[in-house]
Image (cartoon, rainbow, N blue to C red):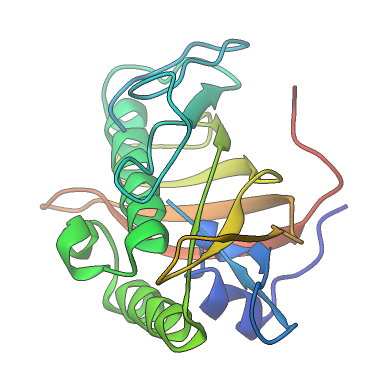
Length: 208
């Protein structure tokens, strides 16, 4: 069963991948929750790395980012909504790894509230002196997307992501919120699709 997301989790998670992810810190001994955010598309039951076989790094945070689908997004609204969500996830993954949200391009993809949450989350990382990166697997269910609105359920496996010291890049503790399941609401009227809200929380695992 999902746990309801708390305000602190949403903020630390960027209301996302943020919504409900967490990281154990290498400094301070406290933990936060965050939620992230695509080039390649994978089919149901398969998983293909985004860009390379190299480990994720600050310079290449998407190297181990994978998208999977419970069913292939249909052409039209489903595909468009999923593409927006994937671009959002990629922007968040980059922001967490670089402590720079403004250059990721996610502003056009999200509501003002979600963008502010992303900025606040990255500001918290800067204050804490760390960045966060590693392998992510996003399992996406696109079935509940209609013409102008949709709720996309996403299970995020981030169990191997970890904090790294922002100055030395020394690895810290593994993510202490290894799996989260989130419902992202997206809408589309006359303009492009946007991510407008997220809810969800920790789960025990994501689909293999």
